[in-house]
Image (cartoon, rainbow, N blue to C red; front, side, top):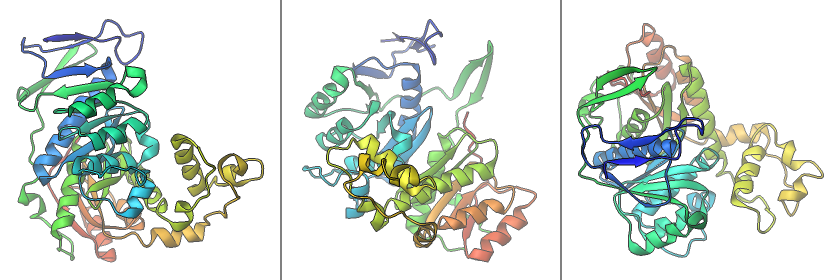
Length: 394
């Protein structure tokens, strides 16, 4: 198939809409179920590039959760602790989680609010365990190199048979020059084929702390690859093989760092014993549970704790998680890695990152205030590499 007509473009008024190969080649994708739309394909194709590159860089199965052409989550297939299994709502799954299922659980679970209604990408063939997890979530579709027959049947039952399932040809390689049109004007550039596993990325370490343990280098590479497919400006916090906070599309870098840091804090606060033991009423919907936890953790916790409200969500009224308790718990999160798609203009980014447990940073460098950024890192013993690589994506 060389062309696929779509229902409409980004919005219903944008017709006609299609995807096609300008050089006349066959499309490298096959729709196995559903009818993906314009934005679905934008998410799918960007997400596929991300997981493909993560797998090549780490040797581990990878998954991504995409929303509006930026990742809400990305991860590699490391085993889940009992705590992560619980906060990602997969502790009740009867089947054993395969590496690709674990990658998906991490990618989807880190920021469940942002991942609601996502498009999923898998680096490996979708197995039954992964399909079982996907079926439980509100999602628009999935792209993968293949599907086990039983897994495909599970996915075909989702959303009354309309769930979007795409298979992509792993041998497909795009042309080295890419083009797009804006306002009738054609833009052309070389594809961003920068290698983010090059040891030279960690050759320039201007901080006093120059130690980057192997697993921290891996996490920084995961951050940089995630940023490569995130709408700029962007910042990504990573811990233990998964993104825990992504800030995308902000005009100010400090706002990116704050946004991503707040998401990383929420990820960590969800592991607080008070949060994990919230007495939810039986049968509460997963989305309502996620939203209730998000409010409970926030400064607006009274919205779900006051009389007349808490009864909707809990069997008994929980005690609030106080600001002091939150501060003390967040301080226990350490060893976090942070990547930025361009240089930090000021040390305020490092100050904010430090509050969320960041001990390792990879950023382009090249600011006129690099000295201030380095000085701030040294104040907290943070190891920082100047990669010399900018990763803007638009």
